[in-house]
Image (tube, one colour):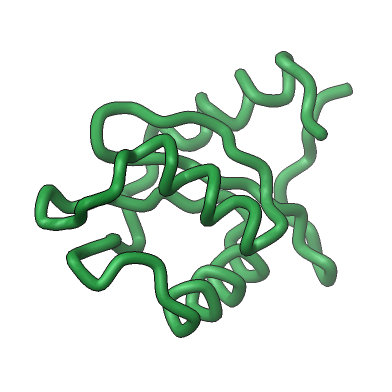
Amino acid sequence: MITGKQRSYLKSLANTIKPITQIGKMGITESFINQLNEALEARELIKIHVLETSLLNTKDAANEVAQLTESEFVQAIGNKFVLYRKAKENPKIQLPN
């Protein structure tokens, strides 16, 4: 569980990154989750775009994906959301205390 201060720090980092993938009409699939797990291990902080063709609400999709990837939901703005998970090997992001 991350604190409010840590969440604010992650939001500031996420402000400059572009979405690495998107959720479309196929929704959340097993291969999509595998792709996100690899991305989270490599980057720790990722942004995902939910397309209008998807029948999912952005916050609902974010919470489901966070649960399936065992990551932390950081924020949702419009049709994008941000997730964070500390890398098991070589963590890059140092969270404030």
